[in-house]
Image (cartoon, rainbow, N blue to C red; front, side):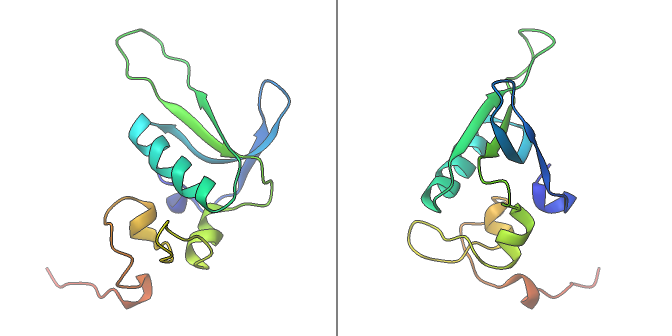
Length: 114
């Protein structure tokens, strides 16, 4: 689940003692690659930890964290603080990998009648 849907600032300590802010937990490798590239481009140190699997048949999932304890994905995205490699501001839909576009702005979206 996307960190934007939770709205909580989750932080803690890894097994090696490193204090981190958790960005997203239980995500697949594709999501890890996307977020890691985006966050490193924006100057964050990213740590990826493998989740324990109950069996070898289960897909490998990961926890992605940053070493910046004040980083909050919700604030960073909605305050438009993150940028893509080509300089565009990251929107919630871009963060959630729903689109490659960063327009329209989230506040311009209109609900469609069913």
